[in-house]
Length: 266
Image (cartoon, one colour):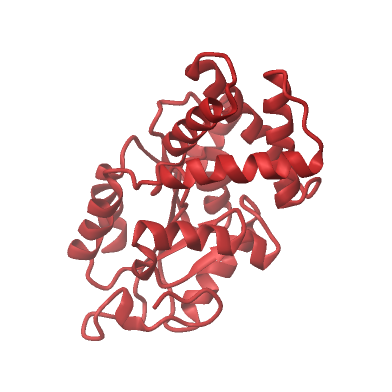
């Protein structure tokens, strides 16, 4: 069973015969890395718009919702909004753009209904489980975990619904530990959580955000892997820092085992 606070059973992620005192560690982001969050958001908001009888095409509405999510979620990460507050702010601003004015309670109820539609649309990216399975096949002693910005219960609900919670030795959530990516402390804490069981000589972190995930991990001493599914062009400063830190860029998790295996076996 996955551990969120204490050590996990070593048998979860590697057999006792293959675990070494320095078993490598691969940590993953969840949303838009393993789970198809963006696709679930798009489907959820389209369904919710129809329920609210909002007039407009899906694509512009989905883009607006994505922009509001980015804006208000970063307000939450910066400590300027609570987790519930950023949800209500998103609902309020989106509804207002469609001529629907909401107070705080109504915004909460609006988001709750949207969230039902979003949750119904949760799926894994098609390349997620094959990549994890191939890592395990090629490096039998590898340990797997998650570091996610968000509330632990919310993220565990995703893992449970997707049926993959038991694949991870530990799930580290910013809402529980009180620090968010890209702060080095959350990466260091995750490695320490695994090292409480067996020392970690090598660790990597895989995520879809260059600065928050890959560069943040590299600053903490991990190998940073940027999953650039959508061909995003980084800023010049980010590109330079990523190159200096040895960040690995991949376009699909299909590329992950080949990219990491040489380092895992060093």
